[in-house]
Image: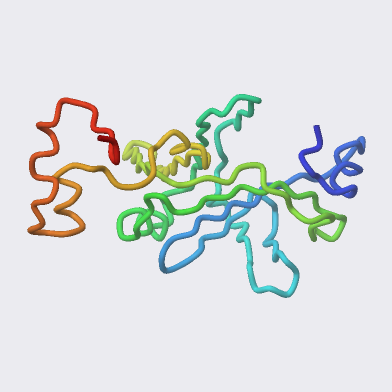
Length: 190
């Protein structure tokens, strides 16, 4: 299944030799962090100023699973924590429910994207961790993200209880005794 891949992507996937890279993009409130596992910086789209840095900070990500069922899938992205800016981001920025995207791209001989990068994961961040190892001096910042189906079964809207009413209309007692109703009420019937 090509999942809507362009003809250029399908052609590149069929090649005996190609240069695949991954682009990582995390959207925080004050900044968008972009990194790549390529050997050089990649600007995409060209001329946009969106530079995915290739400084070795993007260590990799867990496997991405797909299925025909509506399931919640997760991916964990690992970044080096030796560069303190990554540690600072997860400690100071709001990250819950912020967008995280991983793209796959193919590079030409000059190191530019041969075809438009396409998303292989698009989800929401929910659980960063910082692992320090003083013995070897390493530090890894891991960011877990869930697919957009994470709240697929969540019931939208408001609850008809006293506590929810107080959130929206403090002091209103219209739902104060609703929890004591133990029968079905048919509105509009005699």
